[in-house]
Length: 89
Image 1 (cartoon, one colour):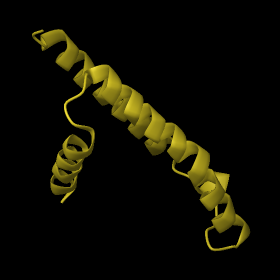
Image 2 (cartoon, helix red, strand yellow; image 1 turned 45 degrees about the horizontal axis):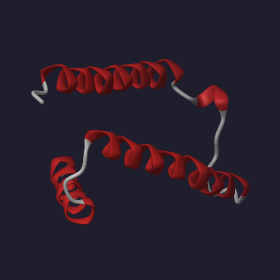
Image 3 (cartoon, helix red, strand yellow; image 1 turned 90 degrees about the horizontal axis):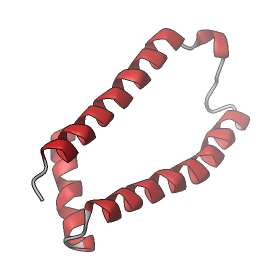
C-alpha cells in the first residue's frame, strides 16, 4: 500500500509541477515540510489540551524513537548521495 501511495504521489507531482530541476523539487519538499511543522503543532496542542490524546514523557520508547530517527536520516542521506554520485549529467 505505501508503494501505491508513493507512486500516486509521484504521478500527481509530475502532472502538477511538470519537468523541473532537482533543486526546485528540493525547494518544494522543504516548503512542504516547513508548512507541516508550522501547521501541525496546533493540531497536536489542541488534541493534548482537549484530553483526546495523552502524552507522558516517561511512557515514550525513547531508545526506539531515537534509533528509528537516526536510521531514517541515514537512509535519506545515503539515497540522496547515491543518486547525486551516480547521476549522469
